[in-house]
Image (tube, rainbow, N blue to C red):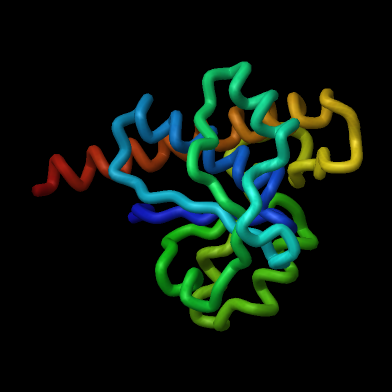
Length: 161
């Protein structure tokens, strides 16, 4: 059962907070009993809010980035979260290096839930505004599938009880 999800990118200012904001909306849409957070593999932006371009693109779609602050992944995260989603293979490699072997089954790529023809969320940080829109499109598609899977799991659990 997936009750707690952590979204991870490198600095926790573009892709992972965008994924968190998208999944906040999915929690409401699908009435999920799910706790989420986001973090970065590096702590360079610790304490900063999401990149303003991510916020602007997301807010145009009704997403909420309120109270998000960048933080670095901690060892405790691997125990606490049921699913830890990396934006790209580089982040996944970093997570695998930090994660105890017995918890590595929790690690996946953010785009692993939908057939999108791409496996990694491209980093829009050094690009133009269109990159942020592309990130939103990709994450929206993949995370919607994940939210539906969780909704089915939670409904099955409710029916069993």
